[in-house]
Amino acid sequence: MRYADVPLALQTRRVVSVDALRGFNIFWIIGADGAIWALDRMLRDKGPPLSSIGGFLGTQMSHVAWEGFRFYDFIFPLFIFVTGVSIVLALPRLVEREGRVQAHLHVLRRALLLYLLGVIFYGGISQHWSDIRFVGVLQRIAICYLFASFLFLNFDRGGLIVALVALLGGYWALMTFMPVPGIGAGSFGPDANLANWIDAHYLPGRLWNKTRDPEGLLSTLPAIGTCLLGVLAGLLLKDEHLTSTQKTLWLIGAGTVMALVGYLWGLQFPVIKAIWTSSFVLVAAGYSAILLAVLHQVIDVWGWKAWATIFVWVGANAITLYFINGIAGFEPFALRFVGGDVSAWLDRMITPGTGLFVAHILGLVLAIALAGFLYRRRIFLRV
Image (tube, rainbow, N blue to C red):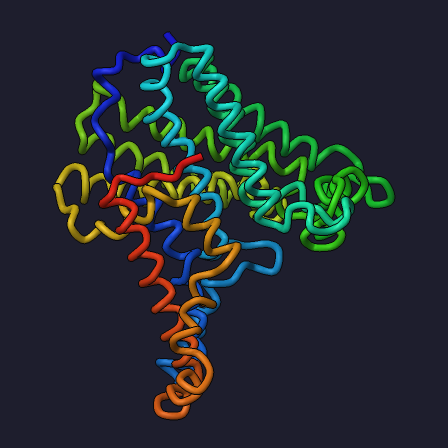
């Protein structure tokens, strides 16, 4: 039986931990990251302990130059993983209400709209055709959502696992054994690997890094695998044969194994976000599963929900807040109140970086206030 055929009665209970995890994810994008950057500036030259703490936090809030894994590299794959979990929670209800054909059409429409929003997010057609960014964060989410949803609607757990292995294993084989013109096979360096070569020669429009794109064509294949791992985690959460605590333990165990296998695989196929290597998929999904397990246990099992309220608000309108932040920005709006001389005064009176820290915190407060306003009035601007 396909998992979209699961009776509606088993799909209606909302999993608050998933909403909170999505909100936690977006929380870092709409201002918390900038606050950490400013905090790093504030703690510089304040003695070894504070400077070290600030330096560590600032480093974790930046992408690795190429190979490796930091917290900031975790944010995007976490969102795609949560998208996969959400597919399991939402699509069976849609199939029950409207039927399988309409569910496919709904997924297609939603993915297309999200893709177009992504194009607009990066400037749309305000520039020449060659300057349009056809790939990006929202576009990748749209593509992953589309293919993972179609797979979920048409295959059982075994089929999904086969698809996952094919995506991750196939990508590894292509990147490892297919020779790159002028470079050869098995190279994973910047501008010296198959994924970057394909983007440089076949990806139209503007590339984010001039000669390559972190959301490029070939690397979207393993990103779909990230979403499928979220789907599998969602199926585990909805498994009626397991107790809530067993689900937590399974997620922690599976997440630990995935992270360890990912790091081991990384000895041959390095952990690189910029080309979304298969080892990166496993490391990021492993941490995602562990974090989901912790939130599931704390929120859904133990019932400690109050502390996560703001994350639930943000998670309910995640794409809307992300889009607003990218187009207008909450921090630039906050600077209208605490920028200029106010920011300079704070820097003088306390320490350099304080003004920017206050601006980011105020921007974050404004974003949370908007999220709470929308949530309390049951306004959910989903695509």
